[in-house]
Length: 123
Image (cartoon, rainbow, N blue to C red; front, side, top):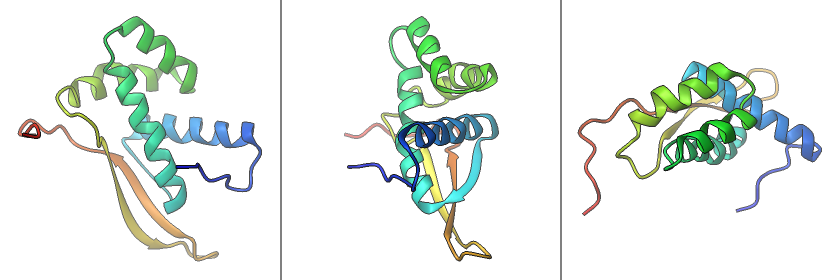
């Protein structure tokens, strides 16, 4: 699956997703366009997967090099990692919320799922 370019240069697009991931982690949910939410899902879920990895010091360094604030890195390691410990993937939800006034762009809310203590492992 090829990521969309969003009419931006590579470095600008990379910075956009770093900012979006940082905001998503810090706030738990953000409102953005559907296309950005769909591409952000890949990056946001990869951050949780890295946090869940076997080496916590590597995970913290890797996450800290991607997100823009230490607060976001701390939330990933102390809140999101234990929340999704038993979940094999699918940590985010995208909800369509209609079109944006002005340019009629389709909007969506992307959020991390709540703690799921009764999540059943696939059989």
